[in-house]
Image (cartoon, rainbow, N blue to C red; front, side):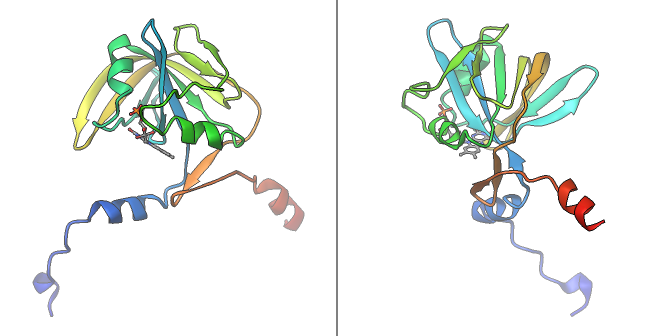
Amino acid sequence: MRPSETAAPLPPEPHDMRKVLGHFCTGIAVITGHDGQRPLGFTCQSVTSVSLEPPYVSFCPALASTSWPLIRATGRMCINILADDQEAVCAQFARAGIDKFAAVGWSPATNGAPRLHGALATIEADLEFEHGAGDHTIVIAHVTNLRAETGRPLLFYRGGYGGFAALEAESSATG
Ligand SMILES: Cc1cc2nc3c(=O)[nH]c(=O)nc-3n(C[C@H](O)[C@H](O)[C@H](O)COP(=O)(O)O)c2cc1C
């Protein structure tokens, strides 16, 4: 068969998207806000650094998210990058309809959104704009304040959790 006669590939199913894109290892964040009555938050892996000047980050909330519309309405958020001992926090904020902040220590960031105790880094930001993208949206947020602690990240890879071990020790030992 000549290349021009090759059948067009079938469009990927959601299962294929999850499986193949799951090979892109990421950190995990909990995006929080406060509506004046109660703290809000959801687990989110789609956080990316976008621009340095102006300082922008992005993330992608699902249209099904129940917390994001409430956070969006406040216009402010805190992106809490989880440390490797916060797998339970990740799981708790990934469940809709429960008291997500039960047994989770937090204090208000400068912009009022919850800073989760023990997070590896916290990024406060204002909603800049949001673009529809299929069953998610793409949020661009303007960073207003940020801070990092020492520690190691919680990583997500192919549907499972793991940690980070630097390669330097190994390469200097062998090199
Ligand atoms: C590792 C991991 C990564 C996730 N990443 C995202 C994400 O990028 N965007 C999103 O909307 N939901 C993501 N979720 C799912 C939400 O956390 C989950 O649907 C949660 O119930 C939403 O809560 P809410 O309805 O209170 O917003 C992720 C969940 C896990 C466990």
